Length: 429
Image 1 (cartoon, rainbow, N blue to C red):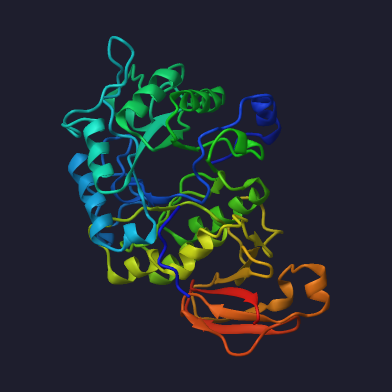
Image 2 (cartoon, one colour):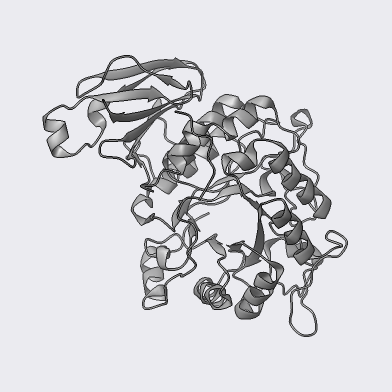
């Protein structure tokens, strides 16, 4: 499905949602067989409820955040940057809007109205431009009475999709929409299933992402479900969301994925740097999370672009087995808290008879030597008993490690603060 450059919030109560969605029709759109790769403007260009740029952290003059809002010209520039850089060739295809495209109020006939100042050519035209570039068009809606951004317009805003799911879905399909994010401001859980059914009814294959609900049975509702509140541009926020997302590992499958929110890779105006970018990219990839870029792709550093397009990392995210890696430690950390352990370790199976990925993340801000015990891989009993040997690859270094590895062997690497060791294991030939 993707042309890869291979490198050879609180959650809804789980019990309540099981009742809400019991007996509903399944999602039927044939998309999402691998996690989506694309762009969302919120983390770099987001518009707050006050009409100003949404800042992931409190404003500090020294951060010099390049936030300037988003509109038709900004989104076209983003789309062209996908084509002009290696992003599109690496598999990034969705260019998604977030809230802020509406006037805040529906027309006399109840239809959504587009802000003509920000989008003078309208949404179908914008989608056509994306499609002409070989990209896909993502849109935004809300499961409540008003979209999240529309509070800036004052009382009476009514551009949410609650009660309008069928009409809005038909409108999105007529615009050529390929991806829909259904947000959770003032949400009513029934809107998630109503929008799913409305999208099915259009006959257009639209990837369906919901901000909520975080429930084990959402595979019947959407292709992607948020498991956390909004991410922020800081290390603790990234790690916290990875920890929360691990609680939904068994829900994921081909066509449906758990979502710890968008990437902060490249947002270098605050406390994050390239090391944190590699670690977030690694965590999201082994967890089979969506890779939705949240930095200004028209103004990236070479290091940011290299992180986002690393073929070996993307191959793990897009692996055909589609199995979310599991966090092995920090299980005693209270839900939602940032773990204090010095290193965090994930392991997960990949497609193949004896193929695995392992990730060790340095949770400290200072340099450390990371260790991965190969015996932690939950290999099939027969192979484990025979101690069948594995070949190992340091993914970020694009380097095959010498020798072979089995139970009792340890891989070590010295890394900087908040950096990581990402490994791929396969049966030794």
